[in-house]
Length: 329
Image (tube, rainbow, N blue to C red; front, top):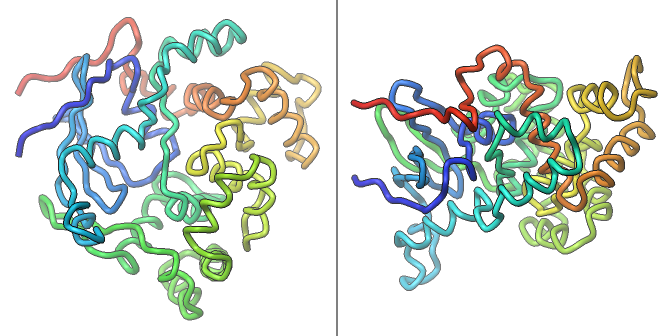
């Protein structure tokens, strides 16, 4: 199976910071061969880079099986388009980095190491239920929970190198009343109720069409609609708005974001024990004023720079001056 190529300079897309920074939980990195394998759009992908290209292989897909007509059967162009949309490659990120650097000296410093951080354009159903799993949780356990959802309720895509890969389940499969008990048995705890109840609500409100209506709303209206779901608070609703509904001004505020804001931008917020609704709004509005209508994307770069896992392993993230070179086999 040959590698396909998309023209994309390495500085426009940094895979490690983008795929391993807490946006999506279905990517694994093989450090020995500098390759990623992951799942989105009912397809298993392998990714790698050289200085001028994003390279990919399609390991398996269900898209051919779900196409409505033979004219829609997947060819190379469809997979290329899916990948370009997923990484939002229509945005020339270096131009935005320059704009954000001119507005903020902290961003200017952070972006030297965390160049090419892309805001993934994810599927709303997977994005929403992944972030329900993220509540009071860490990345490795979130990944385990997401894979359990896929294994138990998603359709099998393929077997590859001893691993079976599954698509993320459709929302209808998570809405049945018995799902809550099943998920509790699988170790989801209180999140089991949130998943089943939210899925039931989404089905009742129109499923995929409901998500499309949220994309067409103004950001704050879409956010309020999402918060009507069981167990969805301000942060998770902002994650969904930002990562899958194309509201790039949405800014999820958690402990990391609060600390960044208090230490560098809003010193009067220092020392607070919890983030109140008023503080949450103040932090989000501050960065929207600073960065504009892509504030959520801009702040994701600061968020990546703040993550301790990157700070503790400086070799895990290439710098702009010294990009990682591929090892020769």
